[in-house]
Length: 316
Ligand code: SF4
Ligand code: SF4
Image 1 (cartoon, rainbow, N blue to C red):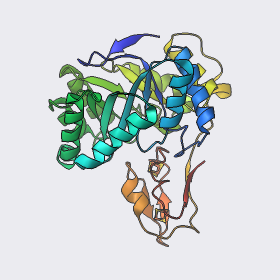
Image 2 (image 1 turned 90 degrees about the horizontal axis):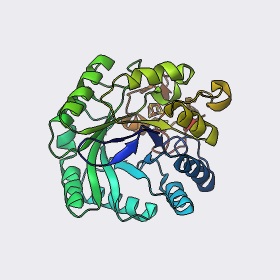
Image 3 (image 1 turned 135 degrees about the horizontal axis):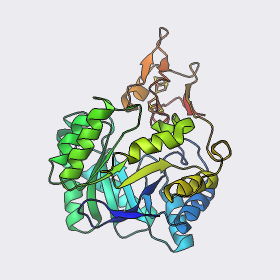
Image 4 (image 1 turned 60 degrees about the vertical axis):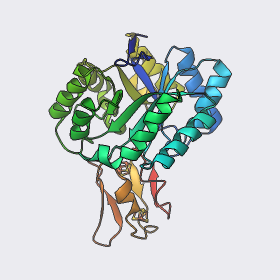
C-alpha cells in the first residue's frame, strides 16, 4: 500500500488509516482479544497508521496487537481535555495503556468547537507543546468538524497535523459546505501541514456508496491518509484491497449493516448531557422532553452513549 509523509513531520503513513472508534465500547463493543485480532490482521497486511482517542477506549487492543505482531504502527490519539493537567494526564494514560515511549500524533479533540477552538484549548495546547519538547509527542494535531477551525489551524504554527471531517454529502460539517471544507483543507496543505480525513463514509451512512464516497475523498488530492472505521477482518480486508488498487470482494458480504443511534425514551431523565456531547447537534428534546435523535444528521459516532447516566442511548 502506498505510503506518504504527513506534511513536514517526517511521519510516513499508509493511505488507509485504521479507525479504531467503531470497534470499541462506544459502538460495536467487541472484546479486547477480538479487536486485537482485527488490528493484527491489518498490521500484517501493511496498514501502518491507527487513529484512536482517549474517548474511544481502544488502547488495550492496539497494545495487544503491537505485542503480538512486533509491528509498531504510527498512532494518533486525541483528548478533549481543555486544561494543562487534563491533557497531560490524557497523554500519560495513552503512553501507559499503549505501552509505548512516545506517541506519534496527539490531537486536540475539538470536534464540536467553532472558531474559538484555539482559545478554548489554549492550555491543553501548551501542554502538548511541552510534551513535544520532551519527545513524548512527535506531532501536534487538531481534529475538527469545523471549516473555521480548519482554516485557523492552517495559520497556527503550533499545529503540525489537521484531521477534519469531509464527505461527499457534507454531513457533520458544523459551519459550512463541503466545498468550503475542501477549500480549507487545501489551505492546510498549502501551509505545509499534514492532513488526514475523517468520516468520508459519514459514520457508515454512505457505505452503500462506498466507491463513490471514497472517490470523492481521494479526488481532494491534498490529503495524506483517510481514516476508515473498521470492525471486522472482512472490513479490514475489503478496505485494504480497495486502497491497494485490487479487485474488491462483494460489498454486501464484507461491509456492515447500517448502524443507528437509538434513545430508549423510557430511560431518559431529560438531563441534556447527550446534547452537549453530540458534535453534530443531532439531539434535541421532543415534546415530552425526552432526547430525540435526528437520524438525517446523526453520524453514529457514539459520543453520546457514555455520557448518558441512564444508559438510554445505544448504537445498534
Ligand atoms: S446523536 Fe450521538 S451518535 Fe449521533 S452524531 Fe450525535 S453523538 Fe454521535
Ligand atoms: S443523557 Fe441520557 S438521560 Fe440525559 S437527556 Fe440524554 S438520553 Fe436523556
